[in-house]
Amino acid sequence: MAHYENPEAQRAGSAFIRRSMAEPLLARDREFELARAWREKGDQTALHTLVRSYTRLVVSIAAKFRNYGLPMSDLVQEGSVGLMQAAARFEPERDVRFSTYAAWWIRSAIQDFILRNWSIVRTGTTAAQKSLFFNLRRLRARIEESSGRRLDDEGRRKIAEELGVPLAEVEAMESRMSAADQSLNMTVGEDGEDEWQSFLPDERATPDVNVQTLHDRDLRSLWLTEALGTLDRRERMIIEARRLTDDGATLEQLGSQLGVSKERVRQLEHRALGKLRSAIMARTDAPRDLLIEG
Image (cartoon, rainbow, N blue to C red):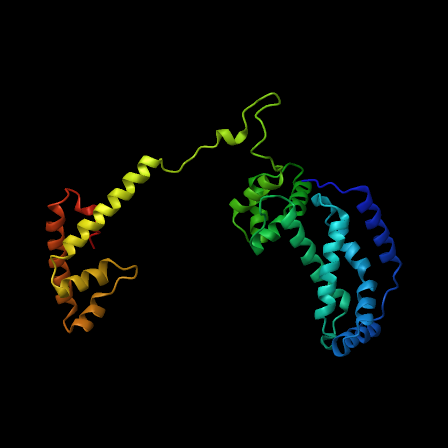
């Protein structure tokens, strides 16, 4: 999905890239000196020097993502945000070069930006899908080059195994990346008047079905309430605890609570269900609509 970049933004981006490439590289000791000055003294000049010296790293990493159709200037801006985050969090005492640490933050910021803007449909919502999105083209090209033919089911299985994702996700991502976004307001055919959205089925229930469903629900609730009124205290407690809660109580739990054995609770439950069935049968010929036999 290509995004338009106006000439002014292109010129500004090119100028930024030229300035970035002209910044001198830092020695390891100088990196640590600047990082300590920022962390320990809040020296903003040191922070700016550290960031400016590695904007060339932002440009280098951003260039690797140019094929996703987003403006280079936007990729560089997002990468610069990642660079600043790295500079703010860098801990020189860990004895790791700042460039190594910053590369992860830069790449993550750019990838997140691409996933948010590559399509109007959210792409790569999980870590596995994100990995699939950014590695599918590379792996597909490698497999097609080695096999001398277009990617087939065997190649897709290899990609799924290498990235640790289901085969269905590979197929879905491949289809997603090969198709462009289209508006549902587009007309069908060049000279057509009907829009694509006119052909989408509405699978929701019709108003008359909704009304009937609500009526039946209220009626069943009334019948069940009246049927429960025919039970004694223990029977009603057992039915409510066993049948009318999401996490039904066990026979052992109820037996301990009532001071009787599990078998006695089972007998009481069986008797209560019989009473309910009789009461409901007086109202309907389908008691199973209300009760689930255990």
